[in-house]
Image 1 (cartoon, one colour):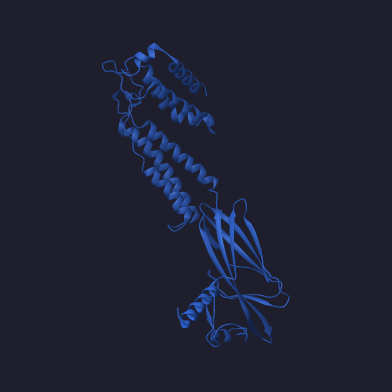
Image 2 (cartoon, rainbow, N blue to C red):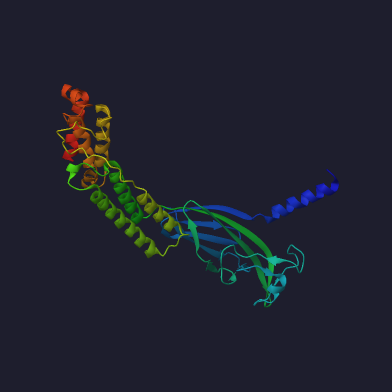
Length: 348
């Protein structure tokens, strides 16, 4: 490598280093840890997580000037050296400030700000609120100019670039948790139970589907109401979170499945669980028992699965079931376990 190329490479490296922040800090906020302070030699930075909604939070940043004689300045937009001299108060670069005289440019705060912010000694000022999304890093750059008054002019002495990498770990709201539970419960009920095509069922397939659809529509209407009350649009995290619930509800399929409660003397027993062994039926019942037992609302949880419980029990007790009738009559450990688990579910 020639001496010329070596010098060029060194200059490029120095330029790259100069472009980096003087201070780079990672800030992780959550519902349980919603405040953090960064202490520097010339200022304190207070960072707070406020007004948390579903999947989205609002971060406030407050600056405190620790200097007894210097002024800290954050600019709302980029200014040329010529424009800075026309500001009120007039601003100009100190002779020791880096860059080519007359061609230096002031760097702005990375977020939207309506005016230039000046912090006199011991001042504290709040920056405009910043939106952050759940588990997404928001990079906020603060080019802080340190200045001093010389008569009526402000002399820009140096620039300190602070880069904040803010990450928010937001818990979903109680409202969302409850609505998500309601959606999952309905989806599980439809998936596990389906609609019974048996002519002895008493309610036609179309009416069964209509009843389910009415419950789906009620939940979707509730979701739309929440989105509207928050004023979210399609770009907001809360909007996307609740729209995902609607998509799950829209994706439910109404599978036709005999509920197993209808006796048909002329034909042998046949249902969706005939392919299971008695051991598998017991484990299904055991899983349903545990789901009801661990639920915060056992009555509701039990009601949502009893059609499946009865269908499983009927499958192995029906004397016309070609798969299970002989084995059930013979008895054994799993017959006893099934009876015991079925009775315990009914007693909850």
